[in-house]
Image 1 (cartoon, rainbow, N blue to C red):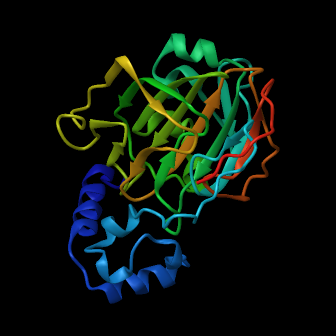
Image 2 (image 1 turned 180 degrees about the horizontal axis):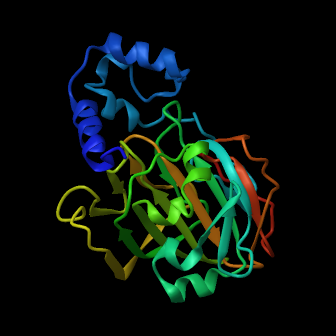
Length: 279
């Protein structure tokens, strides 16, 4: 019953206001944020949004060194992992949602049918930038307007198909292991998403909040290295990464376990593991 978009606008407005560094320090302590990982001292952040979208200091997230490693796109807590069952359905927390609805593209969903996926929840304590799990080229994106339900456990269980009903931003990459899709799911207080690879994207500006889906296919795809920044949550929410079937083997992930951007979440099938990659 809460007016989600109005509430999100109020939260966003508050997050953009200048606040004393002592307030940010208290916030960080309350949520257990490791401020030593931030790229600069707390006194240099003007407000909560700037602190939420902070970069990390060099070396704070070393990438897994194996060349066949698939990297976690974000910090957070594992919600669910597995395979799209029945071809085009993803089951999460005793509920399910349609893959075509999630990515808003029937042809893309058909390519991903039966593929492995990982859902990660970003809490206020987490680093809020999202990165490419494998190297490749961004060939398209879609912005799909929707609701702004909270994405905590209670909401996921209560609202059928929540992730395919909430507003979301879908990045499609062409990689050596086929298509990789990274979905950034908005939530209450987290309606604003930006894409690092395309300055046109600001989901609550420039007409993106008009209620009409927007899609873009690049004539010249944008190259991203493995682990390169892909997008930013201007607060926190959920990421869903999906791969084509039989191209990537994801490691078993227990719901509730922690993951960190740059850590290996799986391996690319048919790719040698020798060599080193670092950040």
